[in-house]
Image (tube, rainbow, N blue to C red; front, side):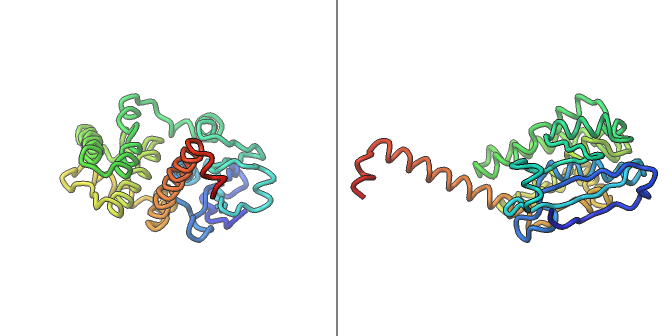
Length: 257
């Protein structure tokens, strides 16, 4: 594996189980935390449980551009996040979430049931991706409209977090996405979350003061590089498709070249 970046010492390791979370490493240096949203989300979930001393948390990064032999042997082509609990490897996002909720001590307290909040934050990330792809007023306004709805919800509830004054799974899902919106939106589109969304900004300021977020958050440069790599991949894909269409339409051109 690559660098072990965190071992939360809130548990003494004797009376509580150790959970290991393998996350993607930075695409810049291959060691620090990468800009994977799901990795950060589950990192936050488990960090909160470690703070409550229900588990001891070990977080390990792996460079997926040069995965070490032991990783390839154990997990083949599987990409992080990967959760390991008492030797059991949980590999898929939905299964990781279910495992934390049902099998990790204290996990059921994080996963509250709130259909309104679930619907409220759903598709927020897709709004960001669409804005970065389209780069037009329509996609930008769609993202703004979504952020306003979250702001209105926080204003109505008057709570520190989405479902109350204690963090839950929805906060661990939302805040990493808001960070990507702030960093990537600003860099690629000069987009900024309006200061008029006072409840949303208050929410983010609360989150910025919490170790669960700051310890799991990737560097801004890694978030930016994450989207640069995505854009480069899309350009290569478009070139490949055009080339395939060319040789399909005119195979003789390839033999004559």
